[in-house]
Image (cartoon, rainbow, N blue to C red; front, side, top):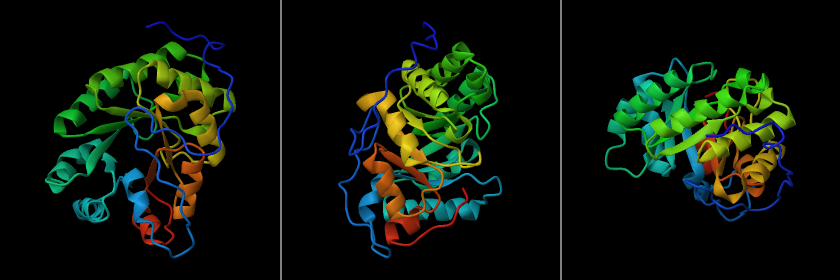
Length: 261
């Protein structure tokens, strides 16, 4: 696999405002609807990854997460890889997918370590993988390492959806563009904004930029700080095809959630 040069991975980007295609492995965005405070929005459920990534999450917390996901019909639960077997068992017989994070939350692991964690998560029943990019390598200009890091996870995922978490709050505009281009070149299915642990979350500006780079072929996931239906609508309007949130029930029931994964 040839390593893209810095110039090669800096395409001309025209951020799009409006709906975007679902992208490979994506979920088509819902049609725009009013999102007045207090108005239930069950239509958003199928673009939401219902998320619980706190290190102190208990089995009772995970059981509640899975129960909520089945009740509201969220697309998936997104959990730490060690919790995949438990959630897989809890979701038996449902249509809810299990998404495992890999290299989370720092991304500061070797490609081999991330590939191994991915293989273990898939073996345990994960349907999708959300991996954290090697932010330090990206900012150092070591694009070969970043490309290999993503490609190893894609290979270990054996055809499952792989989302690449960029940690956008730590990146310059050029670095975001390069990270998106490398993710696409490595065969990822999605690019994703944030871990929720890095001091910043999704913004409409970043979603539009990411959509402009990856085009219609990849999905774009907005994650971090999405707490209301209005927040979700704004992300979808500029190109998001999936939303990661811990406040998922509040979003679809018409409330407002608090921060925290």
